[in-house]
Image (cartoon, rainbow, N blue to C red; front, side, top):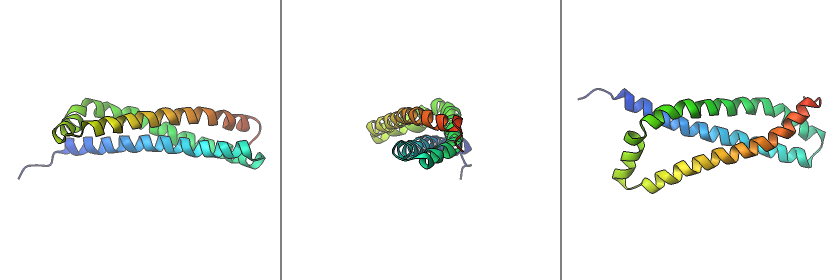
Length: 130
């Protein structure tokens, strides 16, 4: 019996957490977007809710961005061995391409949603919101 391949285990966990970080980034953007839409349609209370949630959602988003960048380094280094080659052998390269394309699109859409909603949240915070 051979020993445990800790490198493979750590790379696979890293890749999974890298995907999770992308989901956290998009989810925080979606939450902020929803709160922003409520603030646009509602009154002062909805604007204050947006302003209250903005700092916490910003911390989640920055944490996700840091993990996406840091976790992306080993993912890039070991991409061929742990993602491309297995996808090639299994004949699922199109699925791998779709997955990574969707992740990039999610980050871009999240960034756009974030920048739009952040303007209103910052304005509320600057204007005396909670």
